[in-house]
Length: 144
Image 1 (cartoon, helix red, strand yellow):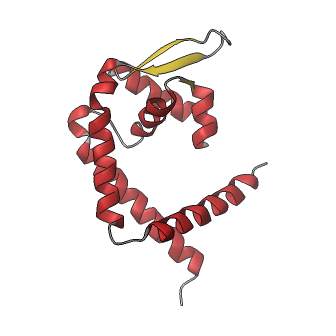
Image 2 (cartoon, rainbow, N blue to C red):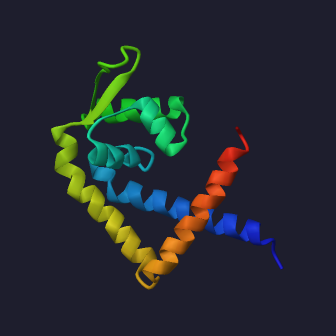
């Protein structure tokens, strides 16, 4: 029998890669990539964040966030302005262009959820999510 952790990792990896392919295809005409949409989603929710905020929320290094934010800014989806509280950082907000595609992004995400989890009970999804969160926190804690 295969190692259960190897098996779990393989299926998580497959699901993640398939989602990236899906979201890239669904948002291709908007020129929004799988590595960018997550920042728009968080900015829709919180209205204004800094790159440091995003790094803490997603546990992604600042260099990767900088590349994605620069791409979104170049495409007109976000605007960066000097942070009033900390002149060394920038506040990030979505633009009108981003607000016009918000529903489209959320619909793509809902369609994906419907595709992969339509026959999965909500309590099972909550259980899996909680367990993956617990495992992720343990993995993150090893670096501290």
